[in-house]
Amino acid sequence: MLFGQSIFQSVLERLKKEDGGEAEEPAARRVSGFTTGLAFDVMEGVSAASQRVGEAYFDNLGPEPAIEAPPPPEPVMPAHLARIAPEEIAAELAISSADTQQTLNEKRRAFAKVNHPDGVAQPFRNNANRRMTIANLLIDEAMRRLPRA
Image 1 (tube, rainbow, N blue to C red):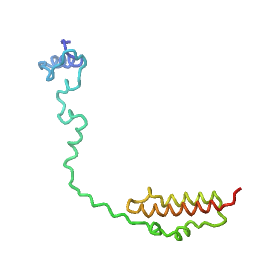
Image 2 (image 1 turned 180 degrees about the vertical axis):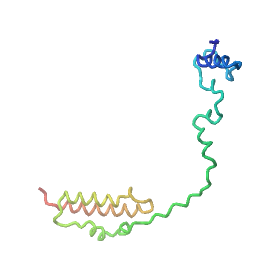
Image 3 (image 1 turned 90 degrees about the horizontal axis):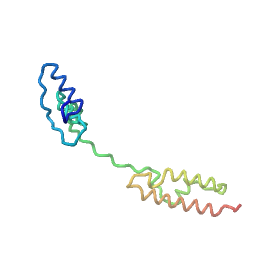
Image 4 (image 1 turned 30 degrees about the vertical axis):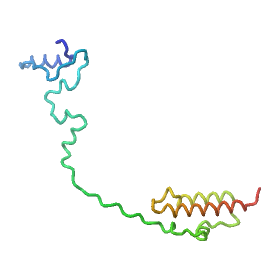
């Protein structure tokens, strides 16, 4: 083994000599004090594309097609978000004197699942916010009227 070469490099040189070829000077010189061999020191005979780690597969892709994406469609407001009158929301909730605290809480959750402002498109959040505010007021008022147990 020659001084300053890794074991792998010295084996490659020995194999070249046995095949009858002369050992060439390595393309990359070793840095003094740097004792580990690096893969790029012995990448002789490997294609240039495969030497670019992480980029070799790009050669097989070809040119990128010039496809222009269509503009996103305008969101359409769901019909229920257009109903913002308290009477319409009360009719949707169908609060009755037979409701208990548990059924009122279930109605609140079900209403919020469909109407919460975080779950609708940005242009319709004001309507959703208003619907949720009115629904919460109606349900809170119904809960205040429940008999205390």
